[in-house]
Length: 303
Image (cartoon, rainbow, N blue to C red; front, side):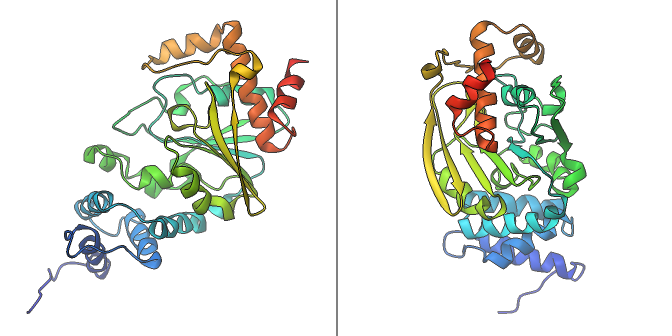
């Protein structure tokens, strides 16, 4: 059989076509990418060395086939190689890039109560299908919080926002984009329990202490009883924090709220919300190593 290719295709485009075939040929022809292939595919995408149509085809095929851990690790390691020189001090709080839709970013607001630690978070234009409010739309006044525009850190991923919104479904980028290697300690939020093990394997080598939280809206935020894991010194420990143990009523926050309503909520908090802010601050202090426990942090912040 003679196989012909378009003579106008660049060598990079031809190489990328082999990755599309790997994830998008069908059940009989599909195969996982190798670690090195995944790194190269991400490089070609972020450097925009292949057409948007080819990127879309790859992302959709890869999503349907299901991303393997080794493939995701190749992507994470590629991103780390690009971003690690920018590593800063303090704590990074990893938010999903689809924004906040159901509650004010309470953890970033709480950061002001831990004034001796610098916290970092990254924002970008909102992503679908959620299209929540990006972090820079909130009037967060914590002087020790640094909000970073992802376009300044990794313009290649930022440039893909429109394409990803045009596709209209989640892709592998939703999994690999929450942390940006900005600090030696990090918190990362997620929705589903299997991501505990996945995020541990993907990120643990890049952080001295990694806290993985099954928090509200896929963030590390605590509004109700919340499971979390700590990865440190090669060990993984499992924990939970329950607001009711601190005399705080859980906050459901299941309905979408307008930006104005979210701002009003935090500007005029009731007693229960003020306590929840304090609990999130205690959790931040504990994650950073300032307190030996959340209970100690909460007690200190009451003084």
